[in-house]
Structure formats: C-alpha cells, structure tokens
Image (cartoon, rainbow, N blue to C red; front, side, top):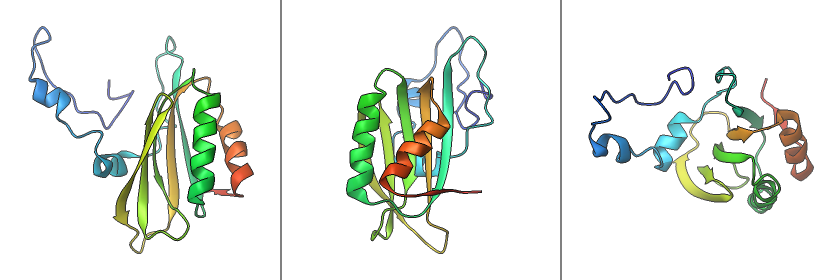
Length: 151
C-alpha cells in the first residue's frame, strides 16, 4: 500500500482486529498534518484497475482569496462526480499565514496555517479523483490569476 500513499500509517492487525484509536484518532484531518503532508504525488502509480489518480500542482504567486474561493466552488460543482479529495497549502495575497485547504466531495474548508517564514510563498495543491486533466485544471486556475507553474 505504500505505493498508493507513501505517507500513510500502516497498522498491523490480525483478522481485522486493531485499535480504533490508531485508525480514527490519527489527526490526519488536522490542518497542521495536512500542511506537512501536501506533497507531489504525481509519481505514484495506482494499480491499472483503479481509475483514481492524483494530480499535483505547484504554483508561484499569491492567490486572491475571493477569486480562489469562487474558483474552488465552481470547480467542485463542475467536477462533483470525479473529485474525491483536494488538499492544499495556499499563499493568499496580503495574508502572513499559510491557508490550509481540504475538501471531500464538493465540500471544502480552509484553515489558518503557520506563518510564512523565509520560505518561498508557493501554492501546493493535490487533487484526487477520476478523469482529472492537469492542464485543464491549470488553465482554469489561470483564468482567475495568471500563475506560473513552479519549475
């Protein structure tokens, strides 16, 4: 399973017996954990029988909060049948903190993350779903703000 998600915790069990705490209380939904785990999953290969795929996007330049929120609502509405999850760390114009994004289905939440230190303010987004087209996602993002993919 590490080939599907190298950051996943593996819990040893016998015939399905394991501690519910290990499964349910791992804080994977917590903004600080999301901030640490948003990474480039583009090299992960799913088994051929699965049509679920990750698309990782790393962009320079700050987003405008209102524009990215409207874009995200429209994107999730337009892709409601094929988006399972989105995780991201966003750089928002005028904000000194990272914005942590997570979505399940067509619902999303944003949280205030850590302050941007001396690091480059770079947006990192991971989309998980079916039939995703990275170039199409980039093109729609560029309609709200000309952004440059991080090389």
